[in-house]
Amino acid sequence: MPESADRESTPWSYAVKLLTHWLEAGERADTLLDQLPKGFTGQDRSRCQSLLFGAIRHFGRLDQKIEGLISRPPRARLRAILLVAGFELLESGDEGHLPRVVHHAVEQAKTLASPPEARLVNAVVRKLGAAIASETVPAKLASATELATYYSHPEWLVQRWLTQFGAASTRSLLEWNQSPAPVFARWRRLDRQPNEEELAALTPTQWKNFYEVKSGNWVQIGKWLQDGSIYLQDPSTRLAIELLDPRAGETILDACAAPGGKSVAIADHFLATKTAAGGTPSAENPAGGVVALDLPSPRIDRLKENLGRIRGVNVALVQADVNDGAGIMKLHDLPTQYSAVLIDVPCSNTGVMRHRVDVKWRLQDNDFQKHARQQLALLGAASRFVAPRGRLLFSTCSLDTAENENVVNAFVERSQGHYVLATSKISKPWETGHDGAAAFLIERTR
Image (cartoon, rainbow, N blue to C red; front, side, top):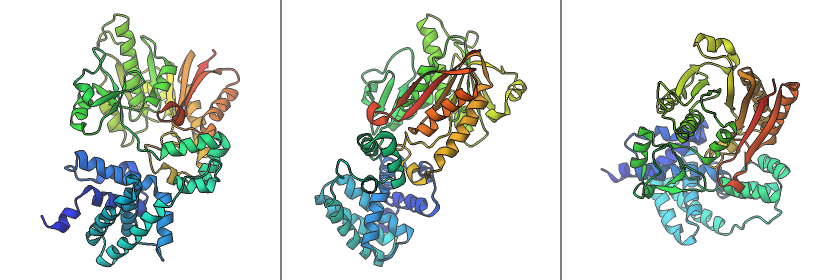
């Protein structure tokens, strides 16, 4: 293979190509990796993701420095090269790595860009390394501007957090968002816990049945995913299920189900409860039931796949809008009211920015109120499926009061005594050690 072709098929070069797409078209970071060749797997794929997500995660900090080192804005491909090289400098944390990073970036630029641009890369990355080395961490009471620049977040968002959480918690959240996210797996098997050999791929955590996936074990992880032994899921997802507390024999409606993580968790809770009580779940003697409802979309295929891994629990999939009401359930010969309804609503994703690294660059200040209006409408629509004395679980992966407490309080107030807030749990990631999330258990009074 010619040397130039070899340079074009490395994790580094693919990271630059995908980052160029992100800069030019604003494509979602979590879908960019789908563009990698099917044969590009294992450590190469992992390294590509690390470079791509790292450059996006630190985009604000790096891009500001790059702009100060170049007389005019570079084209997207050159900008991507400089950003990936800049992330490598941040990642290394040592000026001693500067010559290696510079040399590699220049060699890549010869193929990915042009010889004149490669010479520019040589000069700019050297200066970028010096600029990064001279940085200092913002002071304890630094301004929103300083914090936003250093921690690569929009200034308006940092200011919003300072107002809501205070200086210390905001800095902790910023530091959390800038750290690489581990992958967690929930162990689904009821017959046993992972044995010593399996723990070579899984590290136990403080949360029951949740394990951190060790790098370099994706072949084994893939097998466990296929046979249903595990489900890749952050521990924050347990909050909603714990509050909902699925009870033996219930049928629960998951009203915004795709891609199916919480539906699977509800089913597994049913199975664990029945097994602990000495029962043996089967098709004839199910532990409970789950109706998964969501709009037709590309995510439905993933939902079907996940629901197909449920055993011992009755499962039904309904492709419809929760706003369609009871009529859609009648068409499918399903109940129109449920003892428990879960609605995990679309939100700003401010609790999961460590995973969704480009959310902060897409989010706008007015999005919070737009989300809140949609969430209140969805909560109202879901409530029409709750049976008398039933339970309604509202959950988000947002940290913002506007999307959590304010929505729930508005719903309860509008219900005129038909619903009350029973309890809630909110995960602030810098305190809990996992993603941010909020769960509110609302009870129908009559």
